[in-house]
Length: 499
Image 1: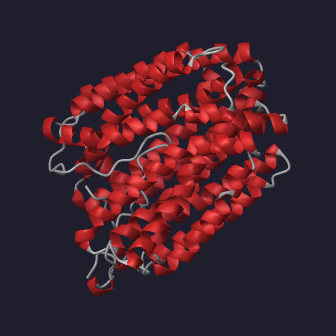
Image 2: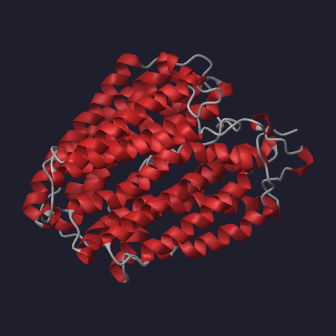
């Protein structure tokens, strides 16, 4: 019997027609979420111009999606275990498509922000299911090939995301970046008919951790609201103070619920492993720096350097290419020498790349100013990501690899969520500064230095705390480029990551 209860005879082969359809559905489904995470950042200046929006509005355009995705992604995996992975995956795809339509027709920025939050719920339902489906559906000897193909094709979708987004924004309208999800979703739903339904029989009769999910979502919402709106309303505003405190209290209550629950969404005892805790702390620091820089850079390229949306989107392609070429090699290297040096030196190199972005100013040359920074940054991330995956999985042990990967992914997404709220504020960017090149350029220089220092600090932290995990896998875990967030290996606890 398969891990999720599917008889071996009903499992699909990688080279079969049905196997190709299963792979098509999972790649396109998760690809929609990956694409959305990259193309929206390129469209921010155009969205702001159309709606006469403030920087805070643009932050919420990014963070409304990130908030619901980060808050609900773990419960999304649990729903698949309980109700059926194909069913929840298809629900997520349809939900995501309908929310994309709402984004495309949004008449105001407030409507767009609300639609983006709804879209994040769909992403939280579909994202965990894609890899879990491959794990439970393919014959054991074919899973490595299926997951490898999924990772590679997902990397390609992330690589073309900024270019595609820039082209659609420049040639037609930013609204098309959401409309394009509709035909993709239709193909996914059609192909998903070939996916055998699987669930986790071990969780039957167990209750979903609804309280934990609700407290997480509300806590992150309150804290994010306070951090984002403090620039517009000030820290003395009663709504900002009240929701901020309620958010902190909700996160505290979440920890209490998880500690006492019989089937917690996040088993807190996993953090008793010092290596696992250190790797997640390092993840938080590095991915916060990554998200902050990638929020500011597309605006800087378009509003200050004078790049078109297409040029700004194309500027980031080398980052993804470098990661696709080097990440697997970095994973193999970490297997030989241990993760400490790669996880320490990688973020320091990436921090140097972020520091080089200070050269990006008015009339910046792509070859002389942008490309060197992107290449150094990509090199640093390539050295970091695969060893980080291996360390997280090895520290938790094979039996908890799935939940370990899911927690690490959630940590990275929360880091990105908070970074987009905090870093512009720390850099002194506010209001309509993004419409005033001189003002935004000054804030951008401060912002990328903050990100560079944070990234390098994550490397120093890793050098101090990271050691080779006992029982680390011999082969590197599947990796993905970091441009859209963490490596998207988000299997459920019943379907551990391939490591």
